[in-house]
Image 1 (cartoon, rainbow, N blue to C red):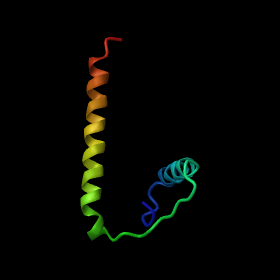
Image 2: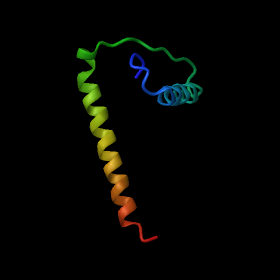
Image 3: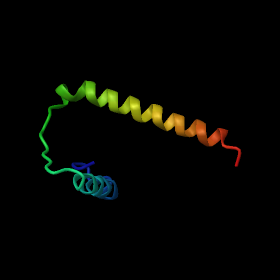
Image 4: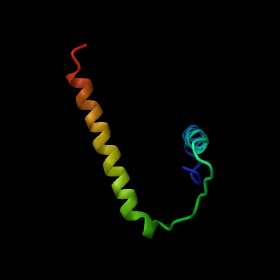
Length: 65
């Protein structure tokens, strides 16, 4: 997104989230982690988000509203 200049809105949203979350900490730091070293964590995070979104979808479909 950053190098492709595809979604400034998405980047602003991410930066906003970082700003809000960072207020919860006494200190915060960011470190670069190469993609090769980050693959297991990225896979875990994507899988968790996928399962979470599927669970929300099931709740919405089962909601008797």
